[in-house]
Every structure is written in C-alpha cells, then in structure tokens.
Image 1 (cartoon, rainbow, N blue to C red):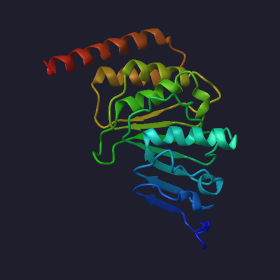
Image 2: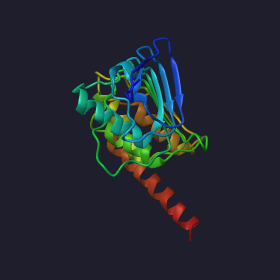
Image 3: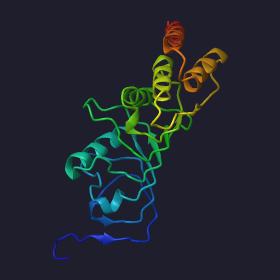
Length: 225
C-alpha cells in the first residue's frame, strides 16, 4: 500500500466486539447492528457514518459514550448521530470532569448501567448523571421506556425524573426500572407512585424520597465509623 492506509469494507458484518479501539476509522461497516467495546479513547472514536449509522445496540464504557456522541455532533453537524440505536449498555466508567451535552438518542428504548467485570454492579454516579440530564430534557430520548442498573440511584432524583418525564404527553413514559436487588417496600411504593401517577403532586413524593436518601446516607456513615 506504499505506506498508505486504505479503508476495508465489511458490508456483511453485523456484530463487532473489541477489547480496545485502534484503527476503526479505516473500517466501512454500513450494516453493523451491534457494537461492543471495553475500552475507548478520544483518539479512537469512529467518526464515519458508515460505521455507526445503522447501529441498533452499543455496549461501551460510560466515560466514552458522551465524548463520542459529542464529537459526532460537532464534526458532522448531525443532531442525531445514532438514528437507529435501540439499546445502550454503559459499562463502568466515572463521568468525565468535562461537561458534555446530554445524550440525544431519538430511537433509544432501553439503557443499562453495569460493570462487565463485576456483574450486578455499576458506578452510581453514571446512573445519577443520566437521570439528572433526563430530568430537564425528557424529549432528548423520547422513546426511552426501560432503565436497568446494577446499583440503586439517588431516590429523590429518580422520583423527580420519573414523575416529570411521565407527565409529558409527547414522550414515551418510563415504565420499567430494573435493579440488582429488591428495594425496601416503602421505596418500591414511592418509585411506583412516581412512575405511575403523572397527575399527582410531585412534592410529597420527592420529599419522602429525600428522607429515604438521608436515612440511607446516615446508615452508610454509621457502617464506616
């Protein structure tokens, strides 16, 4: 090739798994549906639409998805770089200190937060970060209906996000929250109210959730004394 790289076309490829990302910019995968990677850096994000345009599911570290999405928004001037993405699975990764725009995924129906190395666990900060983004901007993932997590969220944040989102008529309500363990009965009842009663005043629900978070925090502090 005379020292020059050439693109490789893999038109029949449907599933692609990488431990880490190198040279993905040279792949043409127009029919790729499922992509999984355990390690990505800012230098290895695929930026060609023939790689990500048809993706229906992605498994990727949390702290890689946001900058990848942001780079596509900035470079391609495309407000919806993953138009067919239905399922997003975010593996362990602490949120970046850099502030990125919230994820805007028009077709997304399910998002999961899980640590591949320790099944059933995830970084709670990543889960809370996503919920905090979703609270003021429910329209950015208008078809989302399922959240799966390997850790409990901040209950007040979760209650506020569920109640506000499910009060909007033009987005799909979030009606499914999958957790790694069964929460206490009072917590379960509170979140069920937030999810299912959109016309109820949210102040009582959120106040009760704040009290639960305070009790959980106090209990955790006593355990470390």
